[in-house]
Image (cartoon, rainbow, N blue to C red):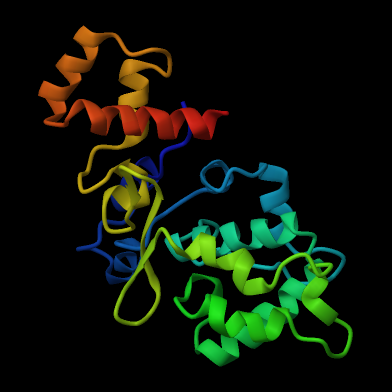
Length: 234
């Protein structure tokens, strides 16, 4: 079974309960992911995520985990953007330089999780100056056209930072729910829990009906959860 972010939270809370250690409160409501779960959710390889989050040839990582070796919800979404830029053949140096400028412009150290990423980022990554002309996009697409689709399924809070990601219709990743584990939209039921119970093959009608009763979900909600887990496993 894939690693569960919720299980990570339980381990943290058990060793240092929030009521016993005020510092542990920083873990709550932010999502907690290990590197395997990050790679799974952004549909990338673990080795690639390691390359982006560790120093390379005496250069700093593109992103360091917010939570002392673990990754937050903002980290998860930031790495999703990085993965897309890398897929578009944007050089690592251009991503690092752009992120630095964006952080200053947007006033956050997690600019890739900000609502204004596309509009502000277009000015940096489509810039034609110095040594990062066209940000390595080879003239294929402007930065905004690359990033806009990534931002569409995200809900932002009143500080313009990402608060909920809906990677598929019927599924949400909410850092305030189950430590950011993918769940049936609007509920606390993890999609992997349903997949583990029902499997990823064709659903048996009787098992589906039982799951609907047990979890107080509709058949459509359960099917959406299974489709999501099936896509992650592909």
